[in-house]
Length: 135
Image (tube, rainbow, N blue to C red):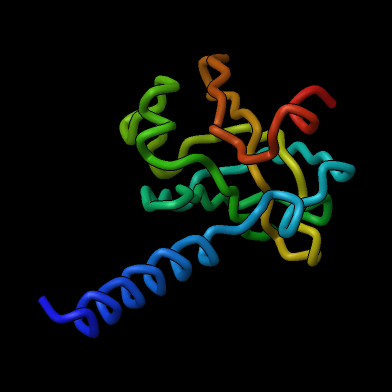
């Protein structure tokens, strides 16, 4: 193989690696450890995707209206290892989620743990890190 081909392949590989690394965000860039939040709502949909799964819930406000919140969770593989399966969270399930609010004020949170109707508490694979987990 010619040196120019090797250099081109190496450059492409490096570019793809850098793009993947930039696509993943840090917790502190999007969520605020100083803004813990607890949300009670009804599961609207669950997205089992990488790099983070998302749980969308309808949360009732004091005036009786509801608003949709997106809860960021760990990867599907991380959730599975924590004992969380798709079957554990069907649409319509009432849950309580503790986590951290989005920095930009959007109706999003990074989930730390979730309590199911039967009282089971499941960790959500939060990307918050140890400092946030201990607060």
